[in-house]
Image (cartoon, rainbow over all chains, first blue to last red; front, top):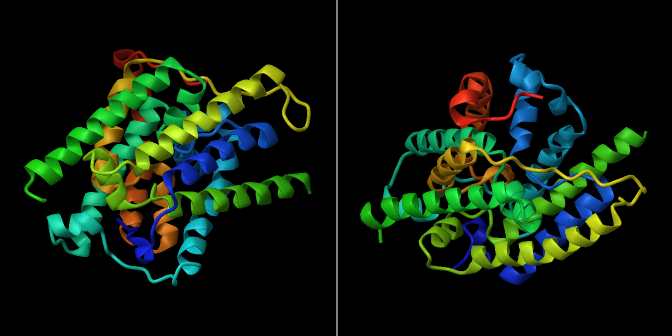
Length: 169
Length: 147
């Protein structure tokens, strides 16, 4: 199996996993920030919303680092493409294209709907794959084990519904 | 000056992390689906090794309780409530639909995958809606007060 991006062979999982693990520890030690990404969506909302939830004190303190981190994630994606055969934007979506050959509009609608569930769900659950799945589990927090069980079970069910029962091989 | 420095460092940290996600398959639609469909070990391997490396590292840091500058460590603790389960389920469905969790949405955008634009707009709308509904969700889902 290769990546959709420039048809690359991915790093071995042990390399990727070790890199992420070291990153989480260094972030805590050097920057004194606990790893977690989805709170950044709230920091972005806080830039434009005066709702009580987004004006709470905690959201305007040191957790705003994610705004800068997000810029880096964007650059990282660009860098990864540029150094592996070039940055050539596309609508390609691998398995989804084999399942339904959809127009960019349909794909966008699907993505907005899925994205909505991600934004709403992660903020309600208090974290995503990074904050609950890696940081929370690595620090043995009960809420994180419950969150991971919930999102993995739902993801497994949903993907099987789309790609097995839904008729795509 | 110090503030600028830390901002630059966070941008660099994000870039490094973005490259890791991009090159390991964690930001790849097909690899995410093959994880959920139990066809490939890649993503399970990544998560397991990441936790296995972070766990002893964070445990040692906690014991020393000092960051590199000598200040006490600030650890994020997470509260368990009904929203953990409900939110987790919604997120899981969204993850399977888009093939992206929050970090990879931004990374995919950088890689030039146009579909990520929709996912980002959706995620911001979703987070915004959650924030607006939070006061009314608090009681039924047993959520902590807004601090």
